[in-house]
Length: 450
View (tube, rainbow, N blue to C red):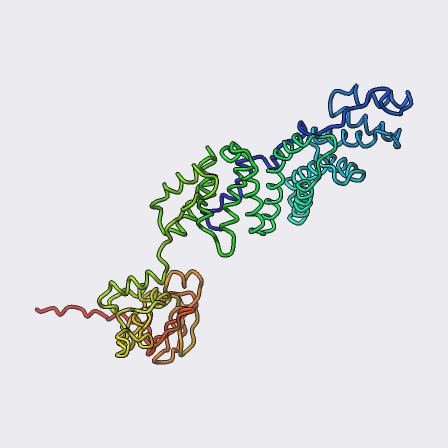
C-alpha cells in the first residue's frame, strides 16, 4: 500500500475505540413491571417475580434473578417482558455475547421487536471487533448488518408513541448505517459502502460530523472507499478525507496523508489545496460548483513537449521514450493540406510519438547503464526507464551486429549502442539494430619529447 494511505489501518484505534457505537439502553422502551393485582399470578410466583424484577437494583443482579424466575415459572404470563428486561440488562452490562443470546430469545416470540433487533445489530458488531479470524469476523459483520437492515425497516413498537419512536429512530439510524457501511467496506463492496456512509452522515447530528468519533471515522472510510473504487474517484476522496482531517484534532496527522495523496494524484501538485480545506470545513458534502483542476494527462505533456521543442532529436532519451509511450495526439505541425478542403489531411498527420521517432530513426545512439532483462547470442533486452527497471520489463531490444560469445548476466548493468529501428507503443518496446556493447575509447599516453 502507498505510504500516503497506510495510516488508514490505524484510524479505528485513533478516532474511536473498536465497536464504539451509540449506547441505546437508556432510550429503549421497556414494559413497566406489573404491580400486584395487575397480572394473573399466584402469590408465591409473584413473590419470586417481585424479588427479581423490583428488588434488584443493578443489571448484574437482576438478569440472573429473572432467568431463575423463568426457569421456575416457564409459562409465566409476563414472560415476554421478562425476556426483554434480561436482554437490556445484559446490554447495559456490556456483554455482547449474552446480549445476543437474550435478544435471540426475544425475537423467537416477537420477530419484529425493535429493541431486540437493535441490540442484535450492535452486539454482533462488537463481537466482530474482537475477532482476528477474517472469515469469522466477516460472518459477524454480515450478521450485524442484517439486523441493522431489519431494524431500519421495523414497525413501531405498540408501547411507543409516534413521536417517541421517531426520536428513537433518529438516535439509532446513524449507527445502523455505520454498521452496514463498515460491513460493505470490509467486503470491498465500495459502491454500497459509499451509499451507507453518506446515509449515516445525513442522519447524524451535525456535531457528530465535526468531532472525533464513529461518524467522523466513517467519513474517512468514505474517502477511502472512493479511493479504492474502480476507477478511483480522487476528487471525492480528497474532499471527504480533508473533511475528516479538518475536524480530527490531534488525530489529523494520521488522516491528512490520504487527503494530500488523492489531491496531488488528481491535480498533479499541492498548489490550491487551501481552497479544498476551506470548502471541506464549511460543507458536509462537496458544495455546488466544487471542482479540482486535473493535472495534464501524459498525452497532454507529450504534446506540449513536442510543440515547444524545435529539434526533437535533441531531446534526452528519457524524454523521447516518454513521448513514444504516451504521444497519442496528432501533431498539428505534421501532415499535408488537402486542396479540396484547405485543411490538414488527417491521413497524412502523425502522432507526437511518430514525430519523435522519425527524428531519430536510422541514427545511432547510446543507451547507458541499462539493466539486462534477457540475453541470447543475437539479442539483448534491457530495462532503461525507471518504470521499466522497477517492473523488470524490457523497453529496449538490441538486435546484435555480431553474435556474443559470452552472455551478460540478467540484472547486471550494461551500455549498448545501436541504430533506432522501430517501436511498439503498448507496451513500449524500442528495437535497436546493429547493436553492440559500447567500448569506451582507450586514451593514448601523451608523447614525451626529450
